[in-house]
Structures are given as C-alpha cells and as structure tokens.
Length: 108
Length: 113
Image (cartoon, rainbow over all chains, first blue to last red; front, side, top):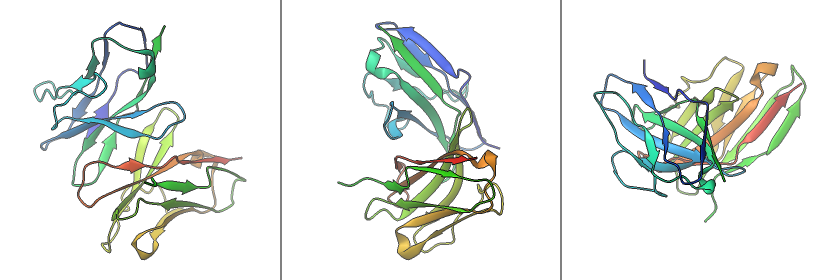
C-alpha cells in the first residue's frame, strides 16, 4: 500500500540557516508528489509539485526515485517560513495520501 | 474569487449526538474531497465526489460517517452517534476535474465531549 513518511514532527532552525524537510514514500507505481503548507491561521495550500520542478518562495524539492524521497529544501530559512508542511503522494487522478506533517519553526 | 467555505467553523457536541458539517466548493469545481486532520495523524482521506459519478467512500472510518453532495455543489458530511475519537478538524477541498491542485477550506473543528 502507498505510504508517505515524514520522519520529523518538529524542526527548528535559525533564520538564515539551511532547512531540509524530509519526505519518503512507498508506492509501486509512477509517483506524483507534492508539498502542501499551512501557515498559522491560514488554509492548507499547495506549495510545489515535483513535475513542475520550480522554486516557490525559495523552496525546491527533487524527486529521487532511487531513494524514494522528495525532500523539501531552502538554502536560507526566513521567519515567515514557519508553518506546518505536509508531503503528499497522488496515487490516482484524484486521491492524495498525506504524511503526518512537519512543524517548522524558524527562530530569529 | 470566493474560496472553499465550510460551516460551522467550530462545533462542540456531546458524545452520542449526530452532527452535520457543510462544505461549499469553489464555483465550477466538479471534484470535492473530505479529509480529517487529527493531532499527530496528518490528513486522512475520507471521501471523494466527482460530478455525477459514484463517490469514492473508501476512507470513511465507520458506517457512522456518511456524506452527500446535492446538485453537484454543496456537500454535507454527517457523523452519527459521535464518539470522542471523532474529535478532529474536518477539511473540505475542491478542484477542477482531474486537476492536481486541491483548494482547501478553513475546516470545521469538531470537539466531542
């Protein structure tokens, strides 16, 4: 069965430091992966999608099929990056399987 | 434009009572999803509606949970005989058919006492 694992429930870094939020998946098919973000008192929203290979708010994520990973990275964290981040795997044309999320805190 | 709306924003109910949660999707979005967000459990898929097709109910945790979507727009999630373990934030999302991006509502926080 498909599964998304985010090993860190909490991650704390200082402003300006690099940050990496880990995501591993298990799926026998061709994966389509996403990162969603939920800022404090805001709605859950799409951050980025692996197919687009773009950088959003300085974040990038590369799909590594060999390691079945889709880690989210940013070279210099900002305080406004503090949020809950969810990695998600799309296994059909609609169903998303989410990880349990990582709460990122960027300290001043 | 208007996003996905959900009501009520908060609901406190006694164990054993029934509750109804409402979702208004973005106009024109034919796909509608319900998720449950529990502390430490991430987001759990509950049910999916697409147009007039039969819904995918594979994520509903028990037969106390049901959902309907009237007229291809508004959806209601009903939980009968609520239990304390039903306490969670219930999120609704909508999307265009086959589109990868789901747009989420603000959620309904359900507390069962």
